Amino acid sequence: MKLKYHPDTDSLYIDLSSKTSTESREISEGVVLDYAQDGQLVGIDIDNASKKLELSELVLDKLPVQSQLITA
Picture: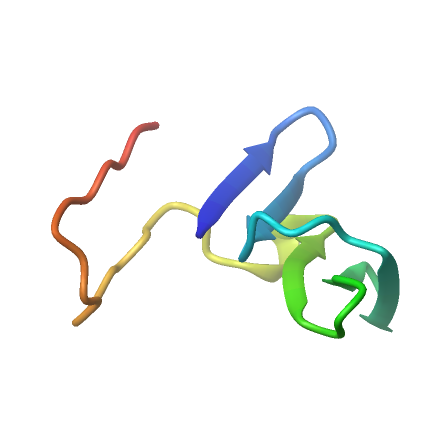
């Protein structure tokens, strides 16, 4: 999973899979879910992210990972 913030557009993309998105559905204003051809959720796009989310802190809790890379 990758979190990609784009300050020039104030959008956050949460990349959940390496599969290609073939369909997108806006579930609320400025929040779009991307799906692969097989129906798997592959990404979440959030416009005006700084107004909708607390972007100053990222907490990873009890994730089964061997390493973590956090850069600002």
